[in-house]
Image (cartoon, rainbow, N blue to C red; front, side, top):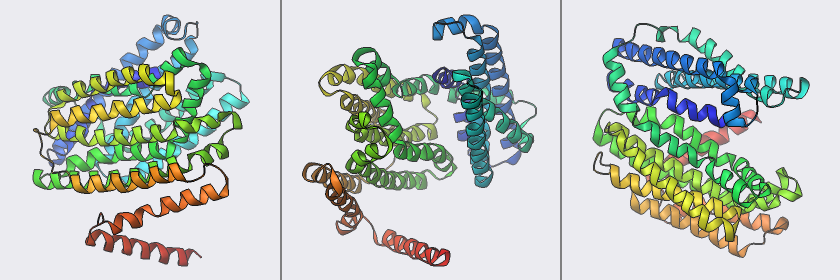
Length: 440
């Protein structure tokens, strides 16, 4: 049902949220921005209310179709989730485009705290099972949404039909692409569950959870990137920023994935029962796949800046097809590692197709030399340590940690970091040391 809620949200919102972020930065006039926000908020409120109402009204047949059982209460909780989740995403977008970081962080943290509290009470104390999990998640979202609506009450008002037409022309072509990309988030687990075994699917699911550090990084980038990408008015400057951000992103996520690869065995031993140790086999590939997804978001912003979103879907569809084919080829001989590799193949295909389709729309002079250097240094040291260092014990951990620590100095020694960047890094390090001394 959680999957149904997210998938339904993609369809119901019709790309309105993405269009709102894009068009917010096309016009600096406060009155037009207000009309844009009111149109997006009003349309999503209406569409989600209708969709959630129908879902609740036909809860029994929907339950039979999706769950194979008569659980209308669970479907009605999911209907609440569809309504709350979709509208909350737009409310968060309103805060992001206005750079109200403190309010955004407060709302997000309150949402987490309420979700944890309600879920523990409903699932552990009340023993409500799946119903408690859904109500805990989406009840908290609904409470936070109402609070944000009070705070953002200026976002309610008359709709602008012309603006709505522009947003739909921009947003609707993104819907099938988003559905295809979202399918990549669960199709591998479904394939393992159906074709391999429940145990394999469980191990792979654990590897996804343990790759949370990469997923968190990519999610943060996903939320922060569009407002930054679209806020730069000058195309030449935007091209330079896109290229530089891509370089930094590759270097940073490369270090994170390297850490996950080299130390993943110890992470699994620390956080999971011994029977789940094989989950480490998929951990590097899942982390790398998610990192590649972040690069895909850079290309999506290029298409969005050119307002040619119809090219997103062919790339996403090619990636989905590649994922299915790679799963069929690799899971049999490689198990869950094959599923992780299939995810990387899917995103690599998506990147290649998307770049071919968007490079003529908006020119970005990517720093190919620096990108190759980052991949070569980080990847080379990771592969060397993975092949040569022991896979258990304190000695193996120390050697792998040493290899990870050597990556940043190696990047500096090979000329990856430029003089200005080195100076900025030194200033940042000095500020951190001063804060540490003050805290001590």
